[in-house]
Amino acid sequence: MRPTGFSSIVEALDNTLHEGMTSMNYLVFLNVQAGELEKILSGTKSMLLRQFDPDHHAGQAVNAGDSLYFLRNKGDCDLRVKATVSRVVSHTNQLDGDLSHLLKEMQPKLQLTEDQYNEWSIKAQVLFVEFGSALKIDVIQVALDKITERSGWVAFEEFSQII
Image (tube, rainbow, N blue to C red; front, top):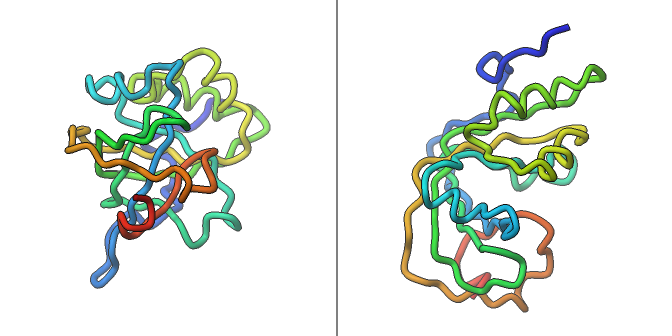
């Protein structure tokens, strides 16, 4: 069976900002070996993947309008780049491996290395997070001792929570 295309996947998340709802900020730890920050800054990478567990992320769902602040790696303390989420799509991998096909289809936006592709293609459920042009910002020093979870994305409302 041929997998459905990215554009025909039912968007499982509400990607519109509702009146009175504020956007969330996320620290995103990138893969330095894959050159992700450089790809984002050059404009070749405009989409990230995030493992999705509906029970774990219920209070921290990524939505259009949210801000992404990129850290080069887990040891980097300097925020230098920001982007705004434009679209989020949830995808559940089927037994026929349709996620593999979808990753290949979205490769121009994802710019995954072979190792990244192999890692993501076996996940059960993922979020495709598309973002607009990344912008360089004035350096913000992050206090890594305030961040206990460094395995992925860290949600924060105010910079005082991370600096």
